Image 1 (cartoon, rainbow, N blue to C red):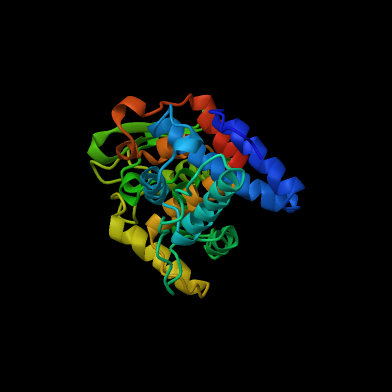
Image 2: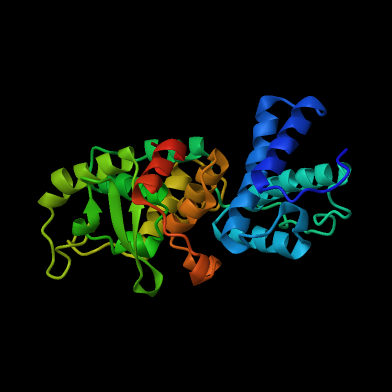
Length: 306
């Protein structure tokens, strides 16, 4: 055991924790990686909110803020609870090594997990939903593209409905999104979604007689007007019924799934935060504007359909 707590950086303590799990707990590599990823998410949050805070000085108040942060990113209660279990293991280790005198997680309440299934889809469920769409019809091609874009870029349904052709930046692999408060952000889009977008715009949409005022909208209904929010909800509900999916899902479910799958895959919280357009979860001073190449790399490395 250490005689005196040293104010090392987060990575130093995480490395010690990893060694402890391997040498003293004899956990499998997968289990160790899962625990370490959970603590690294807390580290990323602290860098955003409390950049000078040592892991030894983290309080239950800091941890509650962390859980709220993760919740606002769209993760299910189950995923939040799993992350919390990794953080608790980390602080039990610090207590065991007498690096701290009290456990800040001891009174921490995790998200309530009821009997209702979380509104987050497994990747295989998303694949089944996509496979259920009839691509031989113009409507099917459009609907497949809508779902691909929702899941690939984490768009809100309102952002999907208002997406403009000029904002699909195929040459650089991004879509320009106008979000809440008329705030603009650039979001990387995966190869599959981009493929279907180009196919829909170039081969399907060109044959639709467009009504005046909707010339720039990507997604159109049969009458040549932009699709509505209700229409997207209906498409998603019908697809779920078609494959016998028992979960209650909506277009927002794909946004939740986008965030959850990226974070669980190891993506940086700040990158996911920026792609979702969640400026409200941190103050303006600490909001990190990340390099576009890095955001593209995150999608390519961690998104299941990239």
